[in-house]
Amino acid sequence: MTARSVLWWGRFDPGYSRNRILRHLFTQLGWQVVDYHPRFSATADWEARLRRMPRPHLVWVPCFRQRDMRAARRWSAHHGIPLVIDPLISAYDKQVDERRKLAPDSPAAKRLLTWEKGLFTSADQVIADTPAHADYFANQLDVPRERLQVIHVGADESLFRPTPPPTAHDGVVEVLFYGSFIPLQGPQVVVEAAKRYRGPDVRWVMLGDGPLRPACEQAAQGMENLRFEDWLPYAALPARIQQADILLGVFGTTSKAGRVIPNKVFQALASARPVVTRTADAYPQALRRATDGGLIWVDEGDPQQLADAVARLVGDRQARQRLGQAAAATSEQYFSTARITEQLASSLARLGR
Image 1 (cartoon, rainbow, N blue to C red):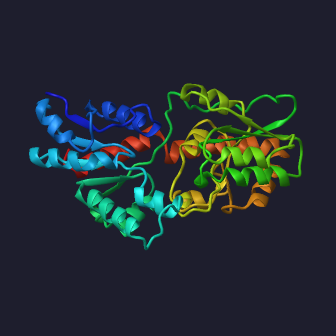
Image 2 (image 1 turned 90 degrees about the vertical axis):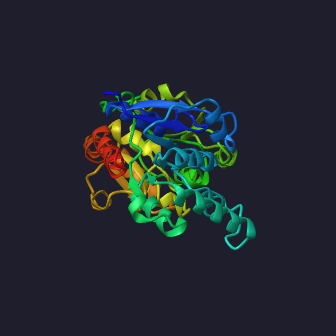
Image 3 (image 1 turned 30 degrees about the vertical axis):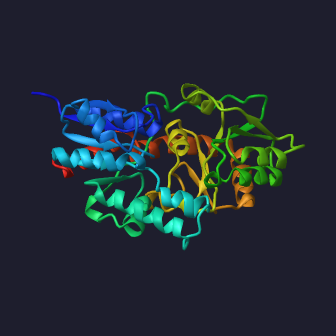
């Protein structure tokens, strides 16, 4: 019997964490993954016809590739093939709510909203990474509920695995933040928390690069307990996480920050590290209520709460060990490869595939 095939359509990055995980799970479920990288997004359907693209069982437009949607819809509709989009973010949300480049009542914002609504509602199924994002797609972008499917991002378990806490490195507990220094992540809140920190010796590390890093470095001048590190290759990230005692999530005050579970939270939990992050509706309700799930919740944009939470953890080695074990259990229960495989299989079943 010929394996079912899924055509990954567009100018996407196959190595991006979300794509890497889902592509692997497709193969685990017995699907053949076929890539189509057109020269131009707008005319990709014509290029596919000229190439005489073999007819797949499903067309998949991966994250961040809204620009590839229209051509993918035209081609899949012509061949009677279901189309799935896994956007991960909304372009309207990014430009209007998060970056605030467009005022909600501006003509440009209204055009962007109309454009994105048309794309999302044209898909046979829209994947959301959290229930909160599914709600946003339904309420803001008019996607019918029956076309929404939640598939968590998770972590690549071949790289991110539970490891014992690090042995004391020069007697100082290390707190690690890594990311792209964008408002959603709230890196400036981390700098301010490090300034306000009062507790046992600790080393705050901020790894990565992005638009807010220069301002963070400026604000951190003269601070001996905070250092910056440059971004690492993806394959080196697990080892860097293993060197840290405590991982930091996100602390931004944007509405989007409350709808996402960032890659680094999944990766830290899978690595058995306690995570301090902001409260958010993106997480399963039972986990938000838990005090022993490996996640320590603080209010959005509150550096004092962050500083106090870190101080409690730094001063209690047994609590760090206990929460690290709980983090691994949380990863296994809610966000494991097995759980995400179930979600993907459910998505395919709903499409009749």
